[in-house]
Length: 131
Image (cartoon, rainbow, N blue to C red; front, top):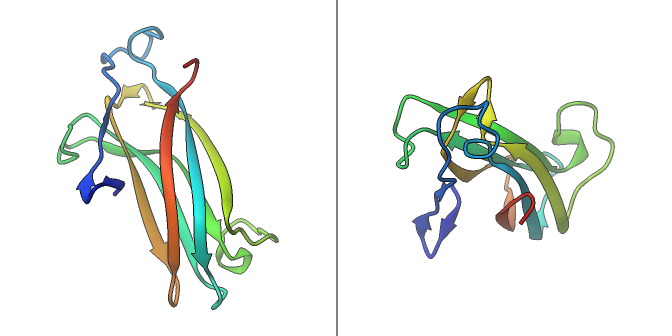
């Protein structure tokens, strides 16, 4: 889970609950993933960067879902037939807090690393579109 100063960081979009209310409920965003260090020398290391949404600020409620995600790492460890390795750089994800007609008011970055000895240093910043 994304952290600032060792504490989980949750974004409150302030959204309402009606997905048809494009002015008040829908939060369209870009997530800037900046990778400053990444070791995938064993060719099976990846990092899954996931933007989660929830109806509960503590993410302990019944509704938690993945709003968007990207996998960064060695090509052989990625699914989908990737042929290119990733490394240090900036990756952009775009998404919204509405999924299957459910509005998720709260959002967080969730990073899951996998492989033999994965090591990654990154930051994730969410930017509301139009700001």
